[in-house]
Length: 88
Image 1 (cartoon, rainbow, N blue to C red):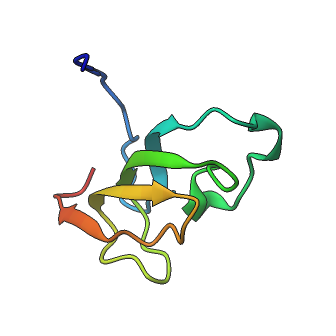
Image 2: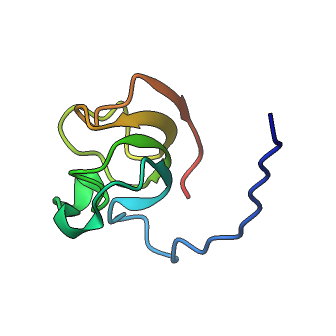
């Protein structure tokens, strides 16, 4: 097994209105020509794999308007594991 480390900085703006957020995805890499989806899917519809989602807008099914979640791609994007955070 090999170690994987990801380090990043993100600026989410200075508005409390939110606009979905960002996601860091590790995908199966099979076919990127079908990537799509609404804002609440972060453009990851059609991919398999996993993503860490930093969500700043409460869509239906979201636990709040500010949370971090690990989601399995290829399924409903509703988070099954999440942690509420202060306003991003």
